[in-house]
Image (cartoon, rainbow over all chains, first blue to last red; front, side):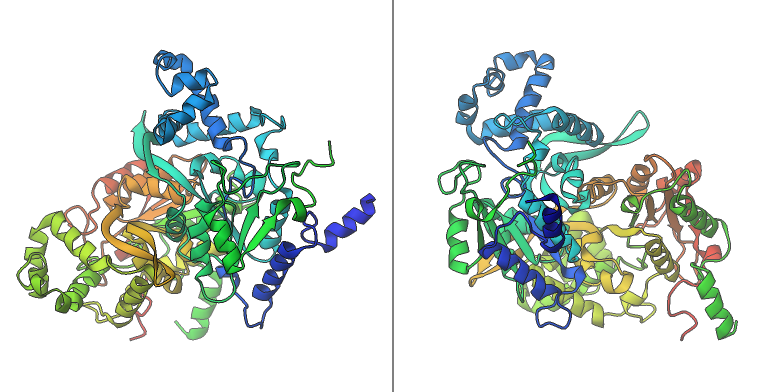
Amino acid sequence: MSLGMRQRRLQTDPLPSWNEGPSKAAILRFLQEVTTEGGAAFVPPLDRVAVFDNDGTLWAEKPLYFQGSFALDRVKTLAAEHPEWQEQQPFRAVLEDDLESVFAGGMKAILDILVATHGGNTSEEFEQIVLDWIAGARHPETGRPYTEMVYQPMLELLGTLQTHGFRNYIASAGGIEFMRAWVEGVYGIPPEQVIGSSIETRFEIRDGKPVLVRLPQVDFVHDHEAKPVGIHKFIGRRPLLAFGNSDGDLQMLQWTAAGDGPRFLGLVHHTDAEREWAYDRESPVGRLDRALDEARAQGWTVVDMAREWRVVYPWEGSS
Amino acid sequence: MSLGMRQRRLQTDPLPSWNEGPSKAAILRFLQEVTTEGGAAFVPPLDRVAVFDNDGTLWAEKPLYFQGSFALDRVKTLAAEHPEWQEQQPFRAVLEDDLESVFAGGMKAILDILVATHGGNTSEEFEQIVLDWIAGARHPETGRPYTEMVYQPMLELLGTLQTHGFRNYIASAGGIEFMRAWVEGVYGIPPEQVIGSSIETRFEIRDGKPVLVRLPQVDFVHDHEAKPVGIHKFIGRRPLLAFGNSDGDLQMLQWTAAGDGPRFLGLVHHTDAEREWAYDRESPVGRLDRALDEARAQGWTVVDMAREWRVVYPWEGSS
């Protein structure tokens, strides 16, 4: 395609990286329904709220949740201050790059790593730590910065929703302060539209200056049943559109679907072993099983990544 | 003043219910500073966040926090379903209108009443309960609906901030779902810009329909040190302006003041025993003591209600 042709296509097609197919058609039909003034399904702009899972929905999540890679890298950075980690699990296994032993420690090992790497600093310090990490870290398989491992079709969907008067929220199990550090630049989603898991914080005056200290204690795990709870707490409105990719998003989709009038429910189905990864019912990361059954039973939109996405990553074709 | 004169004044003066004085001058000076493009203190619209306490700052709080009146009324409504309350404190005292005995029970009595009257329903049911109450209840001294016990000068400030590109948030110790039911209509503040105290909620499927059930358990008390914590959690940006009226707002003001560049810190000082109430250091409701000292030491704006507000309530002069 010539540059001129491509530009014309971009001007007329709001979703140029989506192949013509059932998902693209369903999105465009929905947008027309809820934004046509005078139409039976018209929704005023204030109520146009869209919620998106992040890991596996807006950016990739293999071979490991990217925030997991951040935590593992951070164990290595902090190891000099923690000589005891040389002998203490799960830290020793992390330092030896023995991920199998880390995961054998189950949820306890993961929480131990999480609080040791995410707490003990102020909110401002943590933001800088995340920014420094995300600027330098590279995906182990593609060698790309993690912020380039985002899905071009979903970026186009976020942009199209915005031009149709929607406010896009992230509703992720990822850390709220981890995401807020970089999502505005990457997705155009401002911090007040990010909902995620959190650790406890405490207000303190240090050297005469107020700070928020991040404690080594989990506050809120924003996944499964907790997603509608968090969405209701932060937004106070039922979303009009919800997009996820795993069983952790099922209740968010159910809660969205239960509203009056048309709602859009979407799942990214990772079917593309060549350009991305192919996984669903058996995957420990991003398992899609019950939600896939319910999506099919309810007629929700299931995006077949291999068939429906012309492009996966923004840099495809440019390198 | 003739109607014509009054209309001209409204057109040119964004704060017509504020007498010329130090508070009005400080507000207008601050707005000009942060919104003048090219000026040294210019702040882009995305960062123009204002936070307001509610009780005693946007609406009155005497003789009792209005949500307290809601809870007491609700004990009476629910008493038929709870015959045991005839003998059980603090409920018996409420049913006998013996507020002294209720308050003698301290925080435990208040929490008992709170969870008994605010939990045990779904979020949708609770919203309707609040809407029904606020439509019918009347203030015990003025006979006015509670939604008319709001401060006209503060409504004008909210409006002026909005026209200057600010997003106004409520950051109150009041219940988040109690406020969200009515604040959009009264203050023009949408639900996603309301932060408050909450009780635990749980996602459930009831008769095939997803609901959020309000449990009789406190989740988050959004007061004092917890205000900056809640503001940071919900907004993720430091406010540019904060307005409160009591010691419960001190940390929110400190947190706001600690940002770079100009910030506006305001306190409503209840000095008007004739038109409203006069109280500060000794008042159990809305105590203003430490925050008043700090405001004076730091040069924050302390609004002398009696001298600086030409009008207190929107209905003044109309009845």
